Image (cartoon, rainbow, N blue to C red):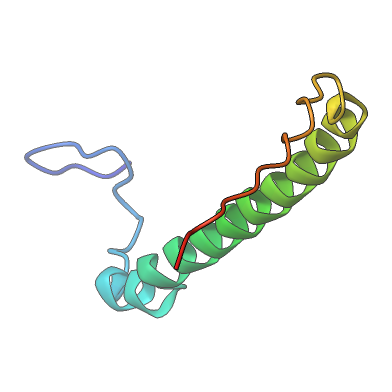
Length: 80
């Protein structure tokens, strides 16, 4: 039994060594941000292209719904 003035949670545990250096040696925050940004950008571009192609194909059948009347021929005569 250990008698001290104040009892701590783990009296025999040692203090962690170099926590700040350990956390800094892990993958940086900007690297994770860049990876997620590139993944998001890739998903956005691919979805935009896919939806654009699908929409163009779906609307192609409605291309000739309204047909304009042919232009009337006109002749302009100028006197010399």
